Image 1 (cartoon, rainbow, N blue to C red):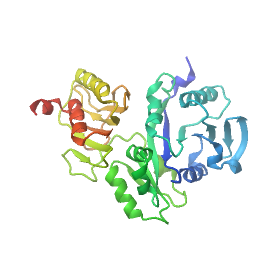
Image 2: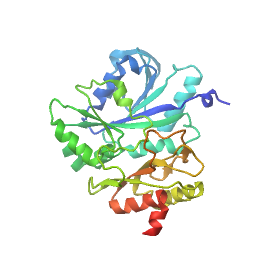
Image 3: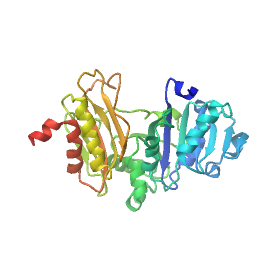
Image 4: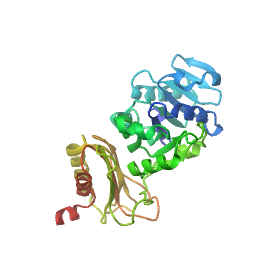
Length: 332
């Protein structure tokens, strides 16, 4: 058996995205210069975008660079699954140093959904990795106008766990914050000036399954008509479900509505389980619902978050309720 399978904890993966000119390359360069970012493997599309030449210690292979702070920089020139698996194999053979986290920088025009789907598409080869969070850079100068003209930018913002506001010294931070919250009030908001930010603020979104309540009254379902194309809905439940219902209902949700649902995540209460059951999927690709040891906070209300495209909020709410609260659906 491979030693890779014996890792006590999965390797967290952070996807760094943002539209062209949003400052993600500047942010990444500053992050990699921080001592807390040692033992990080970074996957980028082209080394030239990151400007890492002055940090290079040696080149172990044509597509891999070892940085002087212990970080490993890998160029993505083919399939992402192959790149991630190759890093694991080479780490096991001692060809590259050990790494404890991975950051993937996408291109400015990248749709984040297929990148996230990568971690569902080949669970056998990528079982050592865990998708921790999606971090999106948002340009306070041009970001709002970009959202109106580019679907990729909409998806980058809608899917984000953490949004880093950039160019705050040149743009209107308050206006940008209001627009971000209107479209995605689940995300953690951070600010980076000239790309400088503490890594802990960027990586703080890891494995977040808590239900945000800062922008909604407790005890009610919540949604915003963020845009004609993309809507986000949060639905709360009130009862424990059977494992059989979860299995069937999640399967039907994926089969019937996976084309429209960009993302579904949340926590369910299941009979016989002390802790919650996590549900996490991207379109048609879902992790198997898995039990957690405990609820993340004092609030133990089951919930699901759905981000969908080209449908109404009422439709998304009805789909989620079929999973979360079948009794309410039956009563209706």
